[in-house]
Image 1 (tube, rainbow, N blue to C red):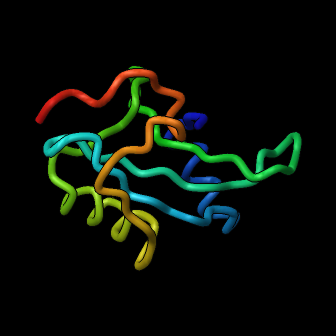
Image 2: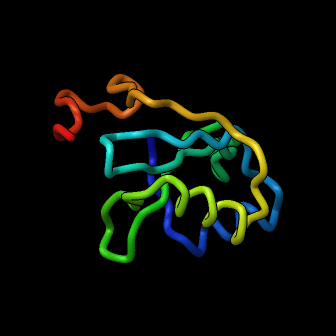
Length: 99
């Protein structure tokens, strides 16, 4: 999974290149989303997640706020969700923090 800054995500939505939005529960108080967009250089589909301004993964403690963000900012009305984070997809070797 790659990460992307807010302004690049805004542009991807403007160009209607975002697809396969998935909301993932990392722990009871840590939720984030991923999406698929074609890499501008290789044209291959890549999975991305949103970064904070400080360069870390953007998470929400309440999934309702995450869903509101996706709907209010981008008009997202459908997607997928995972209640258990898939460590292979995340290239992580450790489990999420206990909840």
